[in-house]
Length: 201
Image (cartoon, rainbow, N blue to C red):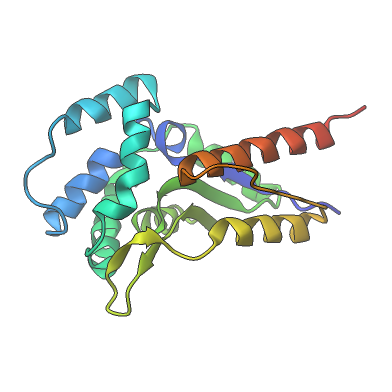
C-alpha cells in the first residue's frame, strides 16, 4: 500500500507573502544581523510579495549560506523561535483546515522549502507539522555556520524516497556546476517522471 504525505511550501503558499522580512527582523533583534538593512532589501521583499520568485531573489538565496558564515546556529534558532510566533499569525486562512484534512486522512504534513532549516523548524513545530524538508547549513564544531551546506542531503532524500515508495530511481548529473540549477533540474525532472508514472493509461 502506497504511503501518502502532504507537502506545503512556505512563502506565498502557507504564508500570504514572504517570510523573509519577519525572519530578518528577528535575526536583527537577536543581534545576528547588523541593525541596518542592505540596499534594496525592502524592494526585494515587496517585489517577491507581488510577483513571486525573481532572478535577483534567487541569486540572493543562492548566496545565503555564504552570508551566514560565522553566525551562531543557536542564536539563529533562538531568533527563529521568536519569528515563528509572528509567522503562525500570517498563514493563509485555508491552511489549517487543509492540514487538518490531510491529518484526518492519515497523511503526514510536511513543510518543504529552500529557507534554511534552522530558520523554519520552530515555525513547523509551532504549527505541529510532522516534518521539514529544508536547506541545512554546515556547522563547525563550535556551532557556527561554515558558509556551506550540510552533507549530501539530496542523495539522502532521493534514496529515502525511492526506498519508501518502492521506486527504481536513477539520477545522473551529466553537466552543471551551479548547485541551485543542478538541484532545480533534478527535482523538475523527478516531478515530470513521477507525474508520467502516476498518469493512468
